[in-house]
Length: 301
Image (cartoon, rainbow, N blue to C red; front, side, top):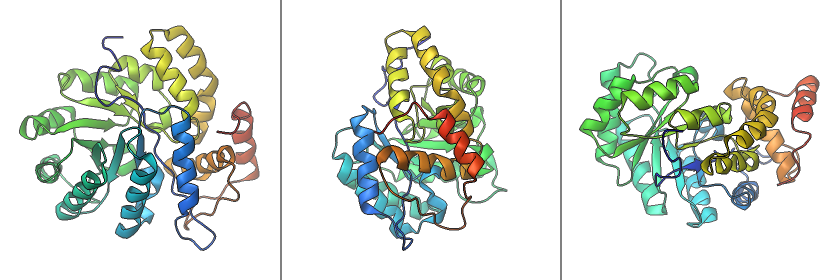
């Protein structure tokens, strides 16, 4: 690889927490605590909360604040905490960034506002305004496949020049995209990929410092990252090949991940029935059969 993947302050596997609900439809405090505790026990390098896998689009601002507070309490400074912010305006995102800092988060990730017709110039202005009021390093989630809008590589270079604290990108896409992004931005950003870690090893080779997958297979992904960091690429490739069918199945779409990834995680956490916040994709017998087939070697956390 062209760089040390552990050379940046923020690196490694940061699983994005799922939002677990109780039978009444409220956030389940104990399930969230267990999720963090089990992820930490697997040696994760950080914890992430508030993203698409946390079903942020189904949460109120008060619930987003609660999840941020709970995660900060449960992580308790053991690893860096990354908070994704999804408020729809500059004031809302700035306030959440300040709260994240007060709670001890290490960095924040901004989602674009829900305006499908937003121009790149408008997005850069939006992100820059939030970054100017944020007391933490700022990342941007660039996931046009899932969110519908994004920023070009050249646009990110301009954003960093104008607002240097925008220094992290959760740039979700194939490793070929990551490679071009790293080159076009001249190493200005700490790069993470998402997509449940489907291209983990090649993303690291392409210039990523880490991944933000789901919790479901984070133990295996930690081991793969550590093997890559030691230069044991052949071993990392073999370990990655073992879980790739599962990751590919889970990441059929965000709704698919929430349906099956959350249920797999619940199984490994030893939780009971998964309660969805409707509307939500429902599992099918065949889907559960596929999930079981490709996860049969994954025991409890």
